[in-house]
Each structure stands twice: as C-alpha cells, then as structure tokens.
Amino acid sequence: MNTKLIAGGTLTGLVLAGGFAGLVSAQSVANATGLTEEQVIEIALMEVPGEVTEVELERRRGEQVYEVELLSQDGVEMEVRIAAETGEILKVQAEGEDCDSDHDDDDEA
Image (cartoon, helix red, strand yellow):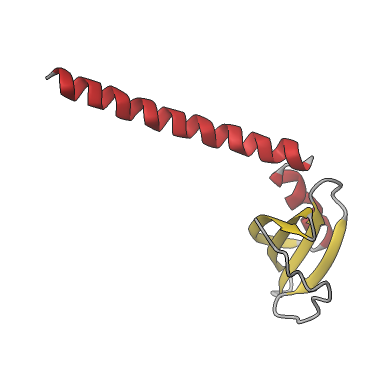
C-alpha cells in the first residue's frame, strides 16, 4: 500500500515539475529574444493582414528569427521573417516563392 502512495506521489511531482519547466522555458524564450510571440504576430499582421497559421523561432546566420506563416486576406500563403531581438521585418514572401537568396545553410532551432 505504501509503495503505491510513494509511486503516485512521485509521478505527481514529476508532472508538476514538467509543467513548471515548460512555463519557465516559455518565459526564457521571451526574455532571450526581447519579443513575445504575441508581439511578433502583431508585427506580422501589420505587414500582411490575414490569419496566422504558424509561428516558429529559428536561428539563421547566428541570429534568432521568427518565421510567421499566414494566409493573407486575398488567400495567398505568406511568410514574414522578423528579427527576434528588434522586431525588424527581414523578409516577406509568398510561400513557395524561391527567392531565398540568403542560403541559410546553418539553420538551427
């Protein structure tokens, strides 16, 4: 009986620790980049009005960059790249366009 209580308590502790670690991780990303995901979405929508479908934080050429994918109001799938530290818009292009001239060989998450 005591073994079941100990095992249950341990499992509960691990679940709570994992949830807390996820919260700390999300805060760390915002602190490390200077922008929250909500701010990045707002910047992207000011550039290309529409509906955001995905937001990713990536490393390109040694800098953290948000890639925001969205469906524009006229139905075109677009990608907006935003500098994570400054909020500067780095690139806006239609999905599938092959105009990626920066040849990001060192892409890392």
